[in-house]
Image 1 (tube, rainbow, N blue to C red):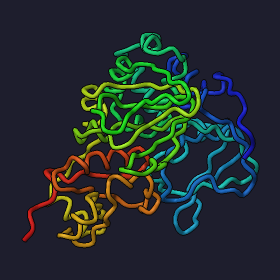
Image 2: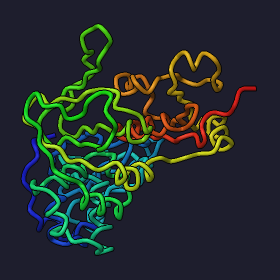
Image 3: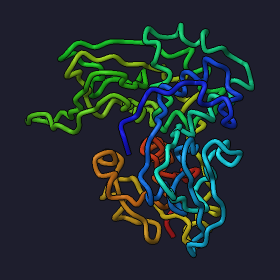
Length: 347
């Protein structure tokens, strides 16, 4: 695919539902969209893929196929068939292949959904929200992060009004290990280093965080002290949300709780797996059948070891650590549930 080019809003006048957006909402949406040229014969998506992008055929022809390769429909740019999103259900139920060279408008599906909801509810104008921060584009940046796309739009509106913009100079400590949790942070620009102090040894370097990364939620959810120190490496701009606002507006909507009975049905049917985020020493004393043990403190580092095409039922002794873990999983695009009430007693 070619390098994205600037997009004229007039291109969207016949595209549904883009043509229903307010002009200012469409402008914000198109800042993050891409107009791409796709070669003949290339597959745009396959059956089972996540529909994270809303795709419109602007020029050329695309054929939709079933699992057996049978052609089901043809979509042609400029014709009525090209006015709607290509097979936008998620996961995709068909495959899409370019018959010749095709020009495609690629829009973030989650951001489109948020913009449509805001426009239709009319609860808060974008101009009102812009006053919440110094960076005119900070809301668009946040809405590119999967975590925020999963939050109900009404919560997002309130969250944007309550977030505060803060900056940190290189070498400045933003979060200190052992301190009480007070804020949830999102990095808008710059870079941060995460380290963990050790007794009688040098701090362990855990990770470097770049724009779009979030941190600080574990102490807020688990009601524990900070388990690491976060320091700015470059001049860094952040948005932060207070502990109470974070719990009300972000954590509660994302913490999809599930009963033990329902979780067992999901696991036994093969629709989900257990993820135990307790320490290995706790796990060794007893666990649910087939559970994967990945302690909360190493979850971010070893997240790649988990399958992304399955649902995870996260568990611990009380539900606190599993709630924090589920939030991290949601940030990274995993489907996760929290075992309500924690693990059952042994026996």
